[in-house]
Length: 371
Image 1: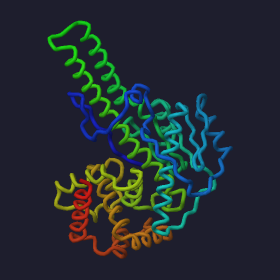
Image 2: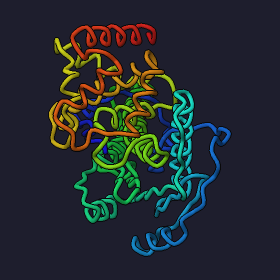
Image 3: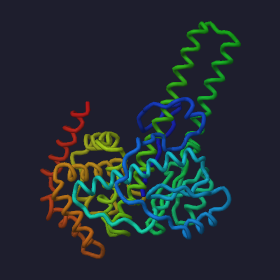
Image 4: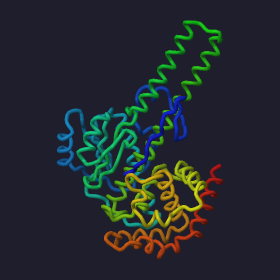
């Protein structure tokens, strides 16, 4: 599960936190799903899975009226949201799976697909999501609109377009449109053309802010949590608390983008690394509480986990593949403190200042290549 907070609204109406991208006014006013980017179709890379009809029927009955089931080759989406929104979520889920499979093939990792389609429950409204998450034992708020529950083997998602923070921005946009209309009627010292242009700029700014937020949620929550589900269900990670958190979360973050570099995580890494002389990688690898609920500086720590895994995948792929295969055979659960670091260093060498210095240099190189 990801424990990141959504950005705050500043007094001037801007976001305190994440960057911007583009959105159409039609998508905004129609309260589109939190999955704002629809992946282009790709050829299926694994055999389609059968549906768990009995399990689906029982879950729909438990959820109540309004919920139905939608099927893709590898997922069952149970939802009360608009079918078009479900289609976007379904496409993101399949695209994430294909990226995970491609990753496994690149490292020659054996895949063990599940016996049935993976289940995602997609709630249109916050109240139902909050209630069902509570029944599953998860305390959620509107800044965490999704999680993977490995006990029930389900992803739960909330349509973030209906979150309070998005509704506030949408209301601000409608207010700007009303202000434009009233300004034209009432007259002003500013010419009609200037007033119209000011309003257009304001509307575009608000549109960009909302789309930026929704796209980021799509990546850091939707694709992230589905990646957790696919990695575990395809036998690429052990279940339960056995997996070190840095590896579990670091791997899931590799699939937040549709391929290539995760610029959002890289930006967070560089910002955090620039403030601190040490990356504290020994703590990150050795102490699961570093990424646990209630931990401080989670943005920086998640970014470090992402950067560490990205480096191992791209700079030491053979050793990383061997490390993952070893993790699937044996884990550190119940072993003495320090085992995780010793096992890491057995594959990758000392996790010392020289290691951190090289990682920091690699991150800067990535940033320079992207500019």
